Image (cartoon, rainbow, N blue to C red; front, side, top):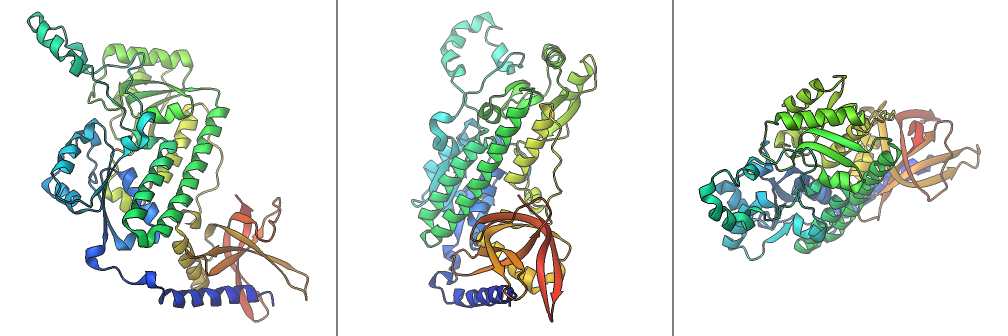
Length: 459
């Protein structure tokens, strides 16, 4: 009798798949009505894809900087401008590197185009670039008084040269990311009202994940005895360190074009490593770590490790195809940050083979369906899922069964997987939210085969 759970769930799921075909909102979208979104950099692109969820097939999303070119040196092609001209939504950072955008938007004839400037969205929370102690200033900042005959001209240009420059790397703050994802979702809901509920649900779920990771960063920093990081490189992580009250030293500001550090800069940073007893010198992504290596060579112990944090400025279309996503990269950055702060990385279970918590509601529903229909493809794999606890007691045997139930996007249909907790975990109550990780397995009772997550843990 208790197996009615599995059979009913499958039956309800099948019913849901049939009724979905008659749903007016499921009508195919005409080609000309395809939602077209253009983004400049990878974080924007990934946020859009997370908001779209299973609706991604109904949209055309472009990432302009998809070949590893740096935001600070990017120049749009004619084809890039044409994509912006015809899109529904254009998302860009808005800093000095995006000055070309003003002309592109001014020339567009697309009156329906919605443009989102990330720095405008964040408004008063954006930060000025700062040159901290020991940081090498841009070369042009040393040239003001080199020629006496140009003093008057320099005086006239002084105001322009001293114009405030803002740090463009706003996406490296999880707090900013939550704000920006919500803003982008709202714009998409307005543009494509038919799918507004899906976009909102996906964005809300994703923001919850961002906030959870933000809390993990805060907890890690609070436990660290060391509160300073040192970069032998450019420093684009100003927003991140300010979020958690960290101090920093670096060779260059985040937007610097410099690639060679002076003797004074190297000496200062090496001395600072010794003074603070740092075990790590950080860099950003890339293969050139020469400055960091030189800093280590000039310390007393010369045994510091060199680790990289990913600022996502060079993420390519190939990386995206290989599964790169913002949340994973920021999670890896947390691990590196913990090591840089002198913390032993916490022992973590290996990533699950199938993580349903990272999928949209419809994708989760489809994945669970596959697990029940083609179980051989999942047997032995570690599954992570969250949902509502369903409790069933077999009145004949007295045995109690627990399942994690997921709903489709419309919340009209549900299905789930049974789970068996390992020792040390208390079972949740009926109707309680639960997130479990366990190994997908099958077992026989009577003439029926059933499926469960064995040795499951609540996370």
